[in-house]
Length: 195
Image (cartoon, rainbow, N blue to C red; front, side, top):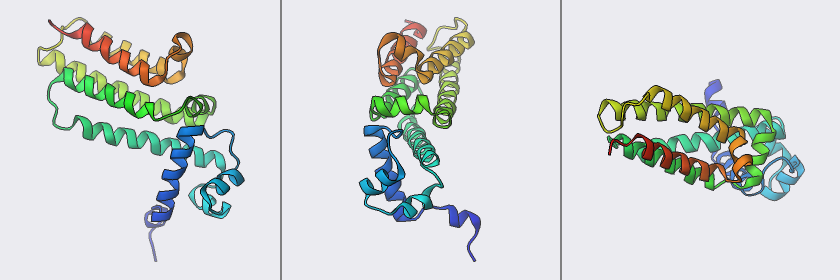
């Protein structure tokens, strides 16, 4: 008898389907698809899709969560072993930007319009803000960043990330989330540097 955890682990075929769904959603968004459309595009049955999630909406959330979980894993690998806070911030935000560059405007718009997917993005954004706060604190402690209200700078960074995540900055400035994260990195590194 298998455990509930073993039953929840996706099969190799399901993992492949999730990757295909992610590629499709990243390119075209997800709101306009029906389960019939997805089954036809992926050349599988609707029951195969129902095995992944009980509805199209839950399938979208699963794919969005996978996209951001993959981003977190890639970012952790990217910054592993880096000790310099400037380099940590630069690499981390460059990685965020690169990962978000994979997403089409349609995908990002669908996330913004669908509360459960938006919540997933928001959780990821809060985690990114916490990570950056830690990098700033490290830079101040190591003496590479000026100690000008480091906590305030970290909180402002969190608000900027929230503005990126909610789409406010993109609408006001006509830039993508990826471009906004690149600019945030430049702003932080230029503003905190002691030199």
